[in-house]
Length: 70
Image 1 (cartoon, rainbow, N blue to C red):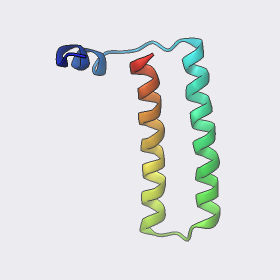
Image 2 (cartoon, helix red, strand yellow):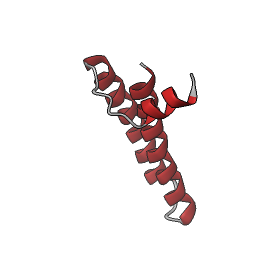
Image 3 (spheres, one colour):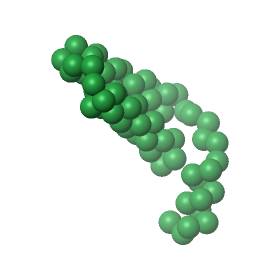
């Protein structure tokens, strides 16, 4: 994809389809399961906070992948 198309795609609104909404929800639900696992197994610490932050980022980027590329 040429860079202009990439920029236009990355900085445009992508109205979700019903199928994409299902995917977003499934991604979020699986991440939520992992978040609870981390909450229950990891001591409160900087590392746990980073794990949670990066899990949130993973969900965001996974959903962006669906939005931008389908």
